[in-house]
Amino acid sequence: MERDDLAKEAESLLCDVGYEQFNRDHKELVYHMLILKELLENISKREETKEDWAKIKEIMNLQIEKSKTHFATEEEMMKKAGYAELQSHIREHEMIVTDLLDIKKCIDNEEDIKYAKDLQSLFLSWIFQHSSNVDMDYRGKLG
Ligand SMILES: [Fe+2]
Ligand SMILES: [Fe+2]
Image (cartoon, rainbow, N blue to C red; front, side, top):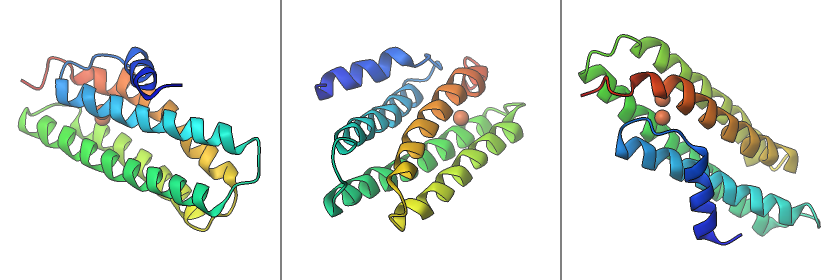
């Protein structure tokens, strides 16, 4: 699939949480997981190489950094707005980061390509679940 189509697909799958910057972050997070999905589909037809692992790690590290920054920015804005659900929202973010870091260990060690698949599918379901349920709750409440 073309990169533009991937970006459109990412956008079409997401809810509008009411803040442009956060919508853009969500879209970017999904976009990179769709790129990983494509890479894994290619790899499934052959044996994975050192270059594949390098690419997977690059996408994963970027994804973890972007997720942390996104979560921190949301938390900052919720704090400023005195958002009532701040603590439970922070806990949700922490759970996602913990799971990401667990998978990261396995990917760093190149244990099994299955962990890259887990990262891709789990992250996509987290981001959809989280943005459409937990993030949607702050819509219109952060000023
Ligand atoms: Fe979010
Ligand atoms: Fe969030």
